[in-house]
Image 1 (cartoon, one colour):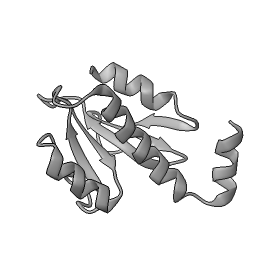
Image 2 (cartoon, rainbow, N blue to C red):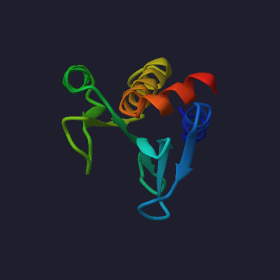
Image 3 (tube, rainbow, N blue to C red):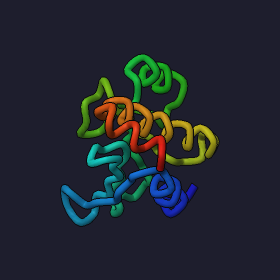
Length: 118
């Protein structure tokens, strides 16, 4: 998996923006202004922080060495995923989808309804 594949996958989702709110090297993807994925562009390894259900986060960390508690994030709700080929691209896309869905669920109903029609 290459970072461009990750970027294109995130940007293909409804109402997603790409921003650099922290600095010029931390790429953040937001849905309706809420973060669901971020990565450092200058890191030696391709790592992505993704939001995750707390129970699922623990299960993933127990089953994959490359998935750890979110670096510089709320460790209960975020995972850091090292994209190193130790798991399938399909799983990685599922984790991105899960993060996006969790953030969308937290949006006001009116905004969620707009997403359904876009």
